[in-house]
Amino acid sequence: MKTSRALKLALLIVETSSIPLYVVITAYILTGYQILFKEVRLIPKAEVIHTDPLLRTSLIILTYLHSISGLNILINRRVKNKALKTLLEYIALIATTTLLAIPLTLELVRFAR
Image 1 (cartoon, rainbow, N blue to C red):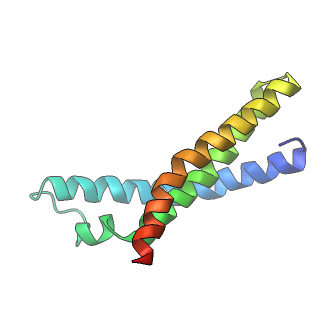
Image 2 (cartoon, rainbow, N blue to C red):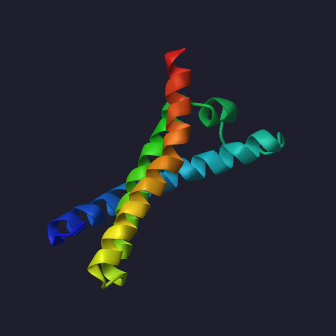
């Protein structure tokens, strides 16, 4: 990301995705513990929530957008060398895309069945 306009967009994405991401992650943590410890009853139908494909896909997409945008902001604020900045932006994009493509592909394969 080179322009201040692109950085403003990245900041908007980070700010916009942070609360929904927090809510989804919290739901996964709470329902996960509820599945592990049956005596804990925080949320009704924890298994349904924890295994919902729409929630999983939402988590993957929110994580991707938040990660890419946040890493680009961090790189642009901290790295002064233009060539290194560009290299790190590409590395962040490739690494994040690769890591999140695996679960997203699994979700798409499962959905196609």
